Image (cartoon, rainbow, N blue to C red):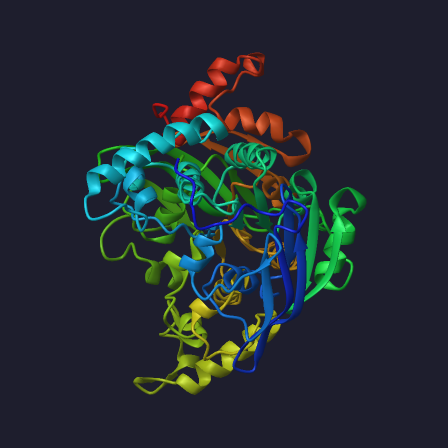
Length: 542
């Protein structure tokens, strides 16, 4: 790689990043207030805080997406003006966003050079990038298939591409915003091995995450933000998860799910022989049988891409299938016009989809409009033949107060809420409809510790009201904590069921890899082969 000539050698004695008195307001909302921060070179520095605490705003200022109202930025001891992202890149800063900024129908190589081409001819730029990828793969273990289309690779590999984009631009400072929000546990472990390698090579990493375990296992120091202010910075080895949670929320937080034993009742949902074939003629569900009873939570564990999403879509009325599904003894349509989400809601099924931004919300629409989606025929929302917008806004305001949505403004567009608050809007819309069955996918993806506690309480409370809940999550810790029964999916099949108090993450992990005989637990070749099939990540090294 060719080093940039426009950047002076960094002063290793100075902080890699120093922020002094950074403030930023959006109208009446003070997102950041007089924030100061020092991050030393060659370290992993965690930043945690509740949704809406101002973490992403602060990092967006550092990366040039926003301009601070007040304050100064120093990079390697030098005062640096960062009016836009090009200035941030020139200063050696790279950022990997929670929602990747990749062009899906471009190749890996094309995405890496996008915006950093050398001159008007593309071929020399591609040749240079290919050579750089060989070096980066060797140095950091970031192996990718350069000619693969982004749409054909898994999210773990897509994240590697985002990191490679930053390193190709020779970033010395790497910001990662909720990097494991869409990763499986195995992919997250691989990511943190890569980050450790980057740190050992002298890179400085800022890690924004809600997951305290990741903070404790990965970072050297951690800063805590609350309501737009920096409340503490501590050495990670000198603190505990409980202390960090209290600093984040301002009160003691229960770091486990507090629930009594379930009292299952009648079968609410019964599925038999569910089969789904996708547009590419690949069978995604291969004869799924399951029951969910009133007053219980059935957790579905599995590596992403093994049929869990298709299962939720079929039950939620968004995908055709073959087989039989009964709700309270009545057959549900699995194809045709009657097999839609609107009909499912009328029949007593509520659905919190896995991807809140693509399936749960229309991001450009206001919160009050989003809370009416799917329920717009409710008489409480209508005034004769017309929608009663004032009634919907009032109902949304009440929901926002009960679910602690911040800011509590029904007129604010969904895109202007943090990820955790977007999730609360979807949850409030679905949970408060008193459903017989709640389908819920990845309930706490990208959500802070305080909101996780609240969301778990709402799910358990619904169970205790006698409702049936089907929970899909890639977080094994969450599955074990919330579920009354756990079913494990692999390659479109149910591999087995377990009771949470009679299993552990190791056994579930083997089932997730398609291994049912624990005598094979030490057959690493078989485990790795199964996992490679699961991810679809078979790729040749650069």
